[in-house]
Structure formats: C-alpha cells, structure tokens
Amino acid sequence: MGGDTRIRKVIFPVARRDTRFLPASKAIPKEMMPVLDRPIIQYAVEEARAAGCEKFIFVGATDQAALEAHFDPSAALEQRLTESRAGEPEEGLAAALKAAEIPSGDAIFIRQHEVRGIGHALLCARDLIGDEPFAVILPDDMILAERPVLAQMVRRYQDCEGALVAGIEVPRERVSRYGIMRIEDDGGDIVRVTELQEKPHGDDVSSNFSITGRYILPPQLFDALAAATPDQDGRIQLTDALTGLVDTVGVQGFRYQGERFDCGTALGFVQATVAYAALRPELAPSLKTYLRRFLERAE
Ligand code: G1P
Image (cartoon, rainbow, N blue to C red; front, side):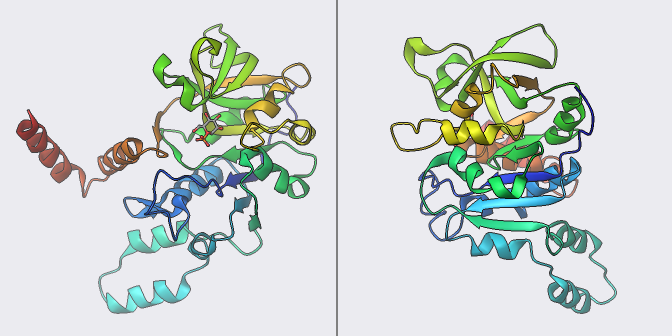
C-alpha cells in the first residue's frame, strides 16, 4: 500500500451523445454549456488541477472544436480587454481567462468515433496512460465542496490499492439512473465494494450507494475493459469492468464531502446554477431576493 500516490493524468470522457440537452447540444458538446460564466468542462479541469493532475486527456466525438479552442491561450483577448478598459483593470476576468488555459503539450484531445460508452472511451486513451493509476472525471457531475472531491480522493488513495470510486446514497427510486455499488459499510469514508451494477432495475437492485463521476483507477482496469462484454446497446460500461477488479486488485467506494449536482438533467443544471451563483458575492444578494419573491408568488 501507499508509495507514490501522485495522480498525474486525468481522462474526461466528453463524447457521450446525450439527447437530453438537444437542441442546445446540437452544435457544441454538452460539456460546453455554461454554469454562470464558464462551461462545465472548465470546472472539471480546475478540479483535476487542484488534485495535482498535469496531463488532461479529453476523449471526444468529432465535433469537439469548441472544447479544444476553449483551453487555448487567450493573450490577444486579454490584451484587448486591458486596452478597452484602460485604468479599470479587470483582474477577475483576466484570472478567469487564465484558469481556462492549459499549457502547450498538457491537453490531449483524442477521438472516439463510435458510440460505445465510457469504458470504450477510456480504452481509446490506454496508450497515453501507461502503467500508472489515473483519474477519470465525468464533467456533468458537478460537486460543490470545500476541498475539491478529486483532491479528497487523491489524499485518501495513499491508504488504498486498486480502484477508488466516489459514491453517495440516493433514494431507491433513483438507483436505475446510476452505477450502483454494494458495499461492506463500516461507517468510514472508504468502504470495500463487493459488487457493482450499472443502472439496475426492479428486484435486481443490490444497494442505493450510487457512483458519482469521480474515479481513481489502476492500470489493470484496461485489461478488464478489453475483456468486458458490451451491454445490449453495444456500450462497454466502466462499471462492468470494475466488477472484474473486485476479486483482484480490489475496488473501494469513497464517501466524499460535497454537494453533487447531476448536470445531465435539466433540474440538476438549474440547481447547480443557483448554488454556484449563491457563492458569488456580486450575485448572491439579488439572487436571494429574487428567489424569495419567486417562492412567495408561487405559493
Ligand atoms: C455514468 C456511469 C454511471 C454513473 C453516472 C454518474 O452514467 O455509467 O455508473 O453513476 O455516470 O453520473 P451516465 O451519466 O453516463 O448515464
């Protein structure tokens, strides 16, 4: 156990062709939709950076030009902003632009041509990872947390082997929307996983401890992915491949500190927007006044 626990590389699967945000996501990847003033993919990159990641691997579909451009340097834009606001330095804006940049060589964009699921997306990045543990962030799970969740996981990973998967209890009626982990619960923040199921239905449900899109994965996962049987839609599910690790290197669930928003749904998106806006001093007072009035009117 232990040793060098640095997690240098992170993969963002961004080719998931979700119909829930059409037509908004017709011409841009849905990860480019903004919560306030930045696209959700940027929150994910900032979280990975805060956890110490240095190489950012995006596995996208063929229409990811906007996403690639978003992480380019913006020297010309910064210059124009400074000139047009002479004497009124917009430090916040410049910092926000800087946070969106990834230095040369650190952003790697690869293509997933087929619709074959997150597991297949990770396999596309296999040669870039090599023989070290790596992180995966599913950007449409946004998590508000004092310490970003991936950083919480990297810190705790030194006490683990195998895979570490973020999890949270959800109401029973929502388990069919998520990957589910059956755990040996001892009340700690790290729990041993004995079984995994992807979006189980009916009597088949083994637990309500659901997977949130943050993972630290061992290189052995790739063999499990290559061996995994695709589901009925032809997708290779990461959850199924993790099942293959339970009896070998092991899988742990991680109870994180933070509030999760499922931005794969319209409601989650709206909730995230309100919650993140409430943290902005320039927006919070007016937003709260509006929400109070809105609720009074609605009652
Ligand atoms: C994916 C995973 C699922 C996980 C979920 C978290 O599902 O396959 O195991 O619980 O992300 O958001 P998707 O959102 O792609 O349907």
